[in-house]
Length: 184
Length: 383
Image 1 (cartoon, one colour):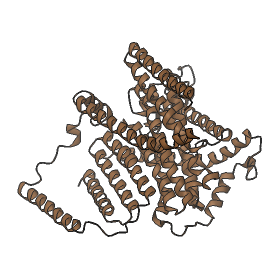
Image 2 (cartoon, chains in turn green, orange):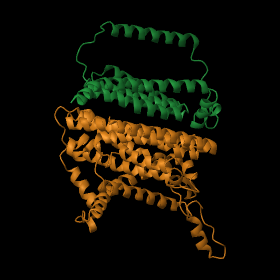
Image 3 (cartoon, chains in turn blue, brown):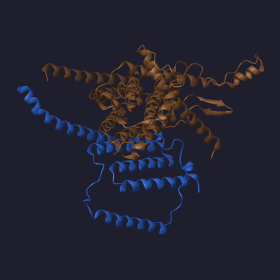
Image 4 (spheres, helix red, strand yellow):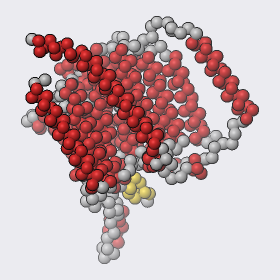
């Protein structure tokens, strides 16, 4: 067994334990922390696959930015303790059944088809700089320019939308105040 | 095949890096008190050892023997791991910063610095974004309202200033055309980027101060409002770990500032390699001088620049009052972020062509003028 393969199994174990911990913990803060561990492990998977840029983006965006906001909201709302019983009692058994179906499906495919040829080793396929920032930037701004621009416009619209929504509320609450102030 | 000597080299370099940072932390606390005393015309600590030199040792021993207290109702697991989560990002953030050029030591080419990644800047940003967790978890797990407020404040502050920090880094990145910090240092062989990117340097320095929660931005631990903020409930070595993280982060951001804007390890003669004396000199002298790689000078330049930046931080702390929280957020979002964005646009335009540069400058002037006119109009109408 090569080092990469053993690393893969170790990381896969950590990722699965973290995912299970996220689902099973009763405290929402613990769930969020397990999810962060999971994201970090996925980032290491990307590193193993020779994609450092995506690995770092994974840590910065998911583990760093998004999960901080999750934790922020959980802590601000005091929603860390799950007190009431689940409102969807049929959900857990259904999830178990569907999970078993998926596992069986995957097993059948593997048994009938086999795992297929192993993917070529990284050094053969990867040119120098593969997965690096320059290669990703070059393909983003040439081949995938249109999707990239469309995504940026979408994000801009979401940002403007968020600002407009919050400002609108503020404006409404301020109108009576300003009137009462001018009235005085 | 695994090159074990390479792994040994990395291991030694990482150990040296940790050692330097931890010793640096101990003597930063000493330097902070001494420099603050200097600026406030006091004497400062002078009892332990000559000139108070062993003060950090005394402090460390005191903290080790203090009682470690876990408040009732605290979340014990997270309370224990929060200081660790705070220290680790501080220790590993310097992993991609070059301390010097590649030198020949013991017949082996060794890069001074742990490694040089082609995504070095992204690595720094991702480690910086992880650093928030320790503080916010410490605040939450203490089961204390002051600590909780300190933790939430720090999250908001660090997330806000991370944007300006990231955008300020884009300036040097565009000029160097690479995310590797080694390449960025090499691109500064003629001029350090602080001369080409003064706005980015200013924004970076201020945002870095906010990012490491230093005065005048030490909101998360504003003692008049929050007792001690997120580490109110911490005592003994756990408190010392937060203290350690703060000072190591100061060293870290100073090192990154040095690398991005002050030319890193560059200085006179540092990139010449081993000098060759003429054969007229005696043979042992030629041998000896040939063995001295001038790249080692880079280490001195690098740490001298870092020390200057650290001195400036202490100076700022002992001369400026703390900002009010809303002013801090307003500064981050309404001043720093637009400045950093404008700097990115101007730099990018200047790299494309002079015409684009002047167009962007014109657009920015019109926008700023319109904004100021709007402000004046509002002021005139009295709203």
